[in-house]
Amino acid sequence: MQCPPITITFLGTGTSSGVPMIGCDCAVCRSEDPKDDRLRSSILVQSASTSLVVDTGPDFRTQMLREKIRKLDAVIFTHPHKDHLAGLDDIRAYNFFNKRPIDIYADSLTEEAVRRDFHYAFSDTKYPGIPELEMHTITLEPFMVGDIPVTPILVWHLKMPVMGFRFGKFTYITDANRIDPEQLDKIRGSEVMVLNALRREKHISHFNLEEAIATVHDLDVPAAYFTHLSHQMGKHEEVENELPEGIHLAYDGLKIFMK
Image: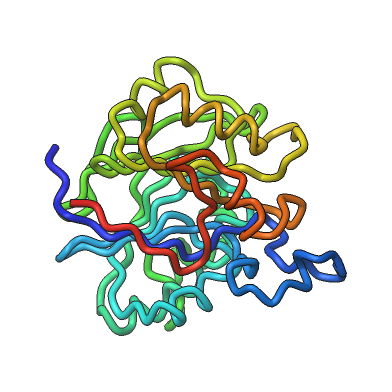
């Protein structure tokens, strides 16, 4: 499936608590560098005719207002944790202005959470103003969203299956600490890869900085950006200066253009 030119916008690059973290007085949380302000992790993928987001965290409304996104066709979910799911109700505005349901793509585990947490959207008796969702259950089979081809990649968040996604030569993976060999093969050949790197210290269910760098090098991807960052990682500018060539920390609002 040929992917058209796409623009990827990082809507958020922070971990579940965001940065700054509530109640924290560390140097990162007090930083005046805007690149140290991190909303919950999500990306926007746009072609000339299609606009989709990967995950709708608690900051979804703020993110879409910041980027002035007028049209949204679909939401693709990685997994059912609240920091990736909680903002879904705010797609109601797109229902109203675009005058159509929003297509939702999720695996069976995440679909169950969506139907539970937003049960009113699936009720037989619906009242005005609720989200209008068109649910699509995905597996590991590739699928299309408008003119954008999507290849799911299964990764592991400790024992929870999480979906990463490849769009043409761009791969996005968050909330992972293990990727099986056959799924790694789906990433090979990417020109740009996004991978979670929570902090410097080892973590039970996320790649740390060292593991994320090693994964990128093993896959020989020429350009990589790390996301789902906690305040424990350190200040953006300081960490950025330590990274190997071709590897960067992502930041909120960063745009990547793929031909």
